[in-house]
Amino acid sequence: MDTPKKIEELKVKIFADGADKLGMVELSKRPFIKGFTTNPTLMRKAGVTDYAIFAKDVLSEIKDKPVSFEVFSDNFSEMERQARIIASWAPNVYVKIPVTNTKGQSSSELIKNLSSGGVKLNVTAILTLPQIETVAQSLNPAIPAIVSVFAGRIADTGVNPLPIMKQAKNILAAHPSFELLWASCRELLNIYQAEEAGSDIITVTHDILKKIPMVGYNHHELSVETVKMFYEDGQKVGYTLYES
Image 1 (cartoon, rainbow, N blue to C red):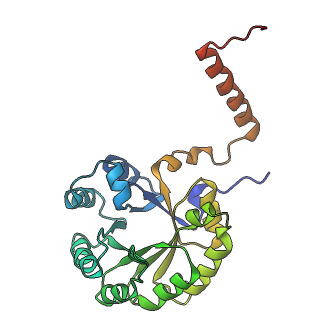
Image 2: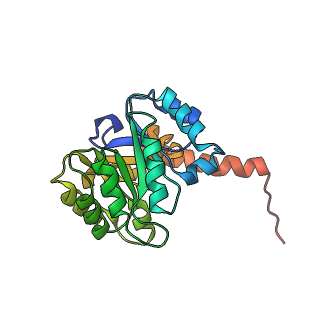
Image 3: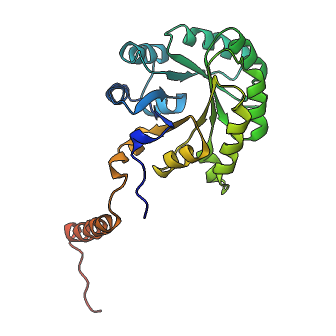
């Protein structure tokens, strides 16, 4: 079995995905963490009740790595208003704009307006190649942007996301200021798949990041440890069997 590269040796940049402020600050001290993303769902799960206070608190601690915060309206005009406020908080902020609203209407005009105005965007919830093409045409090539393709959700439908991510990279290749992001990471292997696909970034949740020490771990030793876990849990419960 080939030994996988160390995380630090990979070209793909790892962004921590979550809304645990203490966890984000701690991860920001690790050199292999290159940025951060969050969204309203993660913030709700983390118990965040005041969006601006949370975001500004995070930005007061994380100043040298990009942080993405998402708008939370379904109305394009209100999205634009929120986006400009969020962008004003710090120079390392990327504003997450969903590729459509809940009605399936394209956000392309909003993306054009914001990007042409100098707002760094992270266009999110992308799952199709036509969406990627539209986003690439809508973004201002002079302004840095992130194009987040939800590879994990594509995989959830039984479709291999690797070919799609490779095609997405080809679409964006003409625009060096646009970075392709592999979103909705499900397991540590996805980091290596993102590397293979040529993705610039992968977002990884805090719980998956905890598995990084497992990279290159001996499979025989892991097998024995797994057997020990099953045995010890059976002993702790005190299971017994008798002939009936």
